[in-house]
Image (cartoon, each protein chain N blue to C red):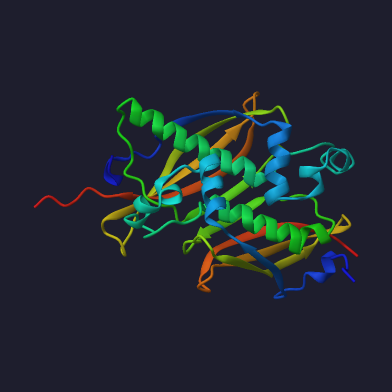
Length: 155
Length: 147
């Protein structure tokens, strides 16, 4: 699917993921060794009142589920965005802590398309990505940006 | 002496050196297999013909490394109360296997809370790759306890 064919408002469910205590601690020991991410006892006495996942762990799981969802679509023969790399993100928010045993369900909705003067063969797509807990409350949210190929000019 | 950092230490324009992180090919593969299994992070041959012209770390991996440098360089020396997000993050240039990534964090904003014993600080975190290009830049709000 070319950039030109992508419709604003298109929403995709990316799947769910349950965070375990072991994984929370393993990720944080390597990348975010703050007491409330790696030490159960210290976390009990922190403002969070217990162990919570690194926000970047919550973000990395979005990427994992987005790739898995894309692979499922490819296997099912659904049209895929001709997606390239990403130049970054905006408005990334950790709204509520992610605790061991919590299951988050991730989604992605196209919110904006931007033409690129510098790259006429590419367009930018912005998507609002969210993760919700079991009760449907938004726990994590950001706007992702991705380059997608444009339909070549027919001449 | 490794002094604790308080809100008052985050003066506008101050640049903190957050140290460096050696990025190996094995770690690029390990992160990508777990979270971002795309050819430009996992397959050296396929990556050559990709948009980034060679193997590079996942952008989320660079974010995680920046987090590590921020935790070691600043947050674990301060009374940190957890992050609330990042208004913007830009992946500017690739982080390649073998790069020693270096980070600096500049205080862009510092506001004391009117009613509580802490203040709100916004840091601009700049991660440099081995070619001294800014690989990633991110705005990071943190909360520091007043001294």
